[in-house]
Image 1 (cartoon, rainbow, N blue to C red):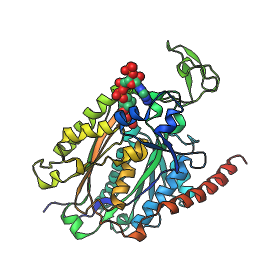
Image 2 (image 1 turned 30 degrees about the vertical axis):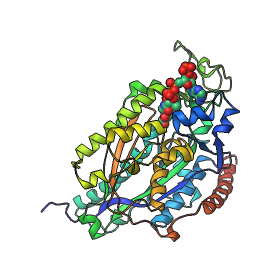
Image 3 (image 1 turned 60 degrees about the vertical axis):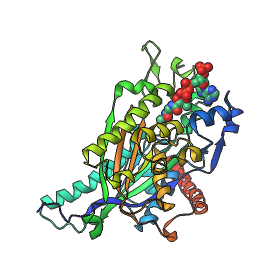
Image 4 (image 1 turned 90 degrees about the vertical axis):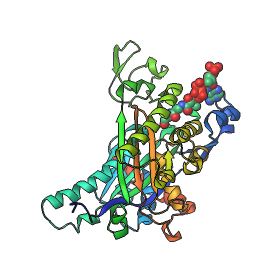
Length: 406
Ligand code: UT7
């Protein structure tokens, strides 16, 4: 008998998301940069962007998404929190995850990680492997596993990327938006789930630092260099030629959209194919043909290209996020996962593949065999409630922030 037969499996136990109420339409952008609704719609499929103000900082969005995911799972508190983001909140230190833990009233290990827009996939992979690692350690010690099976890892992924955009650069400011998605990972002890191998199946993740030049912004800390890489002083004190002569240094998003586009399509579909192959999923099987896919919602044309390359029916591939929110960074596919679950589009036992790419460059894919039934209404947090909670958490955040100045 295989030693792992009958062991509990790691799976998503609940999902959540938080999108700020502010919206920036294509028409609004027409008044800000030289662009048009027609150009944006045709080249990107985007209609509006979710944009946060100072009242919805990253940890507040994270705390709302976290609370929604915990409610969805029927779990009071997580054992760990991992927050994938590009450090677009006000603070680099402490970690946004630690602030989220404080806002939701939890003391637990809580840390941030990045990984570009693939960071949500990486965070999910770390969460699943953390849980399997804990289980394995306990088994190797020959000890009882019942406590370990109660462990959960809350994955948050998202950004307030609009805060590093240059609203004079039409090549980037039309694309990006704000929002956070969440998934609570834990063990499923359900015998059908174990028998039918529900839950997290694995990932394919990759990066290429040589392509870092295609999408980057400076941290706002550390030594600064001019165009010839000559040291010119520390951030905040220099007139930096690479940042359009801004004396008060402000990180600014740089991107070669065209090249990123080409890499995105190739690398996202390549990652999906590698993963499917590695996991031994038969591409002729009914399971593969009915697989649901959430590609990073970076551009409608990228999503279309992924659909064509994977040869799956368009209805199986999520594309609503592009028009609904635009590209809310590593939140796109985590928010989509939550919306798919809460809108009842994910059936138990169905394969769900997510794939993404982002600054680094990084890219990857991961696969879940969905272990949940569609949620009952009491497990889903309504938009109005989320907006109320955003206000509550913001008040708490300001109290927390005030204590920093004491
Ligand atoms: O999370 C990862 C984030 N990164 C991405 O997702 C980037 C992926 N890349 C893209 O989505 C696309 O490359 C863009 C939407 C950024 C650009 O679309 P494109 O079809 O690759 O356009 P392009 O860069 O080839 O530009 C075509 C033309 C240019 O004018 P000329 O040189 O042909 O006269 C641009 O200057 O369109 C012009 N253009 C615009 N025109 C109106 C570029 N941006 C705009 C704009 N409005 N916003």
